[in-house]
Length: 149
Image (cartoon, rainbow, N blue to C red; front, side, top):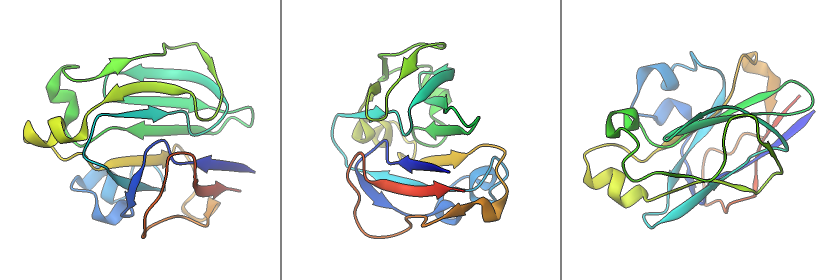
C-alpha cells in the first residue's frame, strides 16, 4: 500500500474535470488533479522513491513498491518549452516525500494561455486500485491525496 500525498496546494478537482481527454479519461492511469493556488509555488515529491522521469512540466517518482506517481504541472505546458519551470531534482535522484522537485508559477502558466490544473496519476494502476481519492475541498501540500492499494 502506498499513500500518495499532494505535491501542490490547491483544490482537488478529480480527473474527469481535467481539460485534456487523455487525463480526463484516465488513459494514463487513475488519480486526481489539483487546481493549484495562483502564486509562485513548489511541486514536491508525493512519495519516497526515485525520480524515474523528469521534464520541466512533469515528473514521475517510483516508490519501493514499484508504484510510479506522475505529477503533471498544468495542461499542454510542454508547449512552454520549460519556460517558467525551475528543476531542483534530476532523473535518478532519490527523494523523500515533501522534497521540492520543481518550482513554478501557476499564474504565469495561466497567463500563457495554458491550464494550470495538474493531474496526479497512479501510472499503470487498475481503476479500482485507489481509495480515498481527494476530489473536492481544499488541500495543502503534503496532505493525503489517495491510497494506492
